[in-house]
Length: 260
Image 1: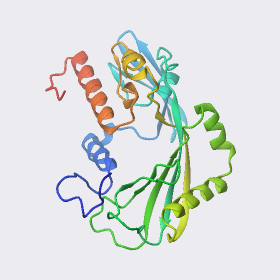
Image 2: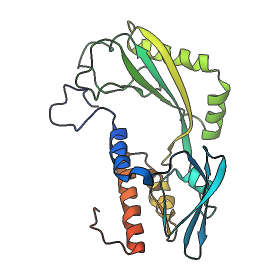
Image 3: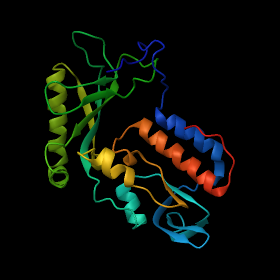
Image 4: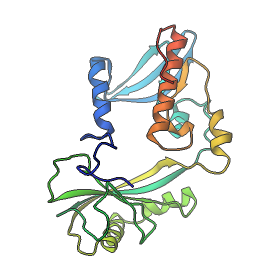
């Protein structure tokens, strides 16, 4: 699937921190124009733009922000709670169990060298990613594996119910057993578990070419998220985010060079 550093040569662009590094660089350029610690709970149209209500956690009160335009860069099931005009009935989301697993040493085995994305052939899990794969100087000792299991063999609502009702210790046992099935000699330490009820949108039949293109709102609201394609991919998120930004700048009369 993809080799871990330092075996990637020049065919992969990678750096410690992953996409968080890119977000940090963008945040640094914006400076104090970012308002952290806000929970947005309503977005409404006004005569001259948009009103955004957000709860300021530090102050313990709701603040209204007036804007000429707004980009909603969030999953559609969240957007619909803020803007009732968004129809999310065609959208379904798969729940995932994700675990960060500390191990005493990187997994070993016969065949090709350790990859950054390692797929299981012994279960329904997607295997694991080596969380230190982006660090070319990562030691050969203890590391962290990020393990994934999409609950995709049953209806999403039933899967979410199972995900919540099954005790955390039982999920951790499943994680441990699955990793040991792949690597019987793996020395497993701490397992940090996370339940994602709406981890990824499901591109169900008819969604990508049918419902997805109809998820549009009129200016001055704009949508920017991979849900608009029905595929949870970085490339889709980048495209829709760029498209939303350019549409907003056009609406505001802000000169720009298109990247699309």
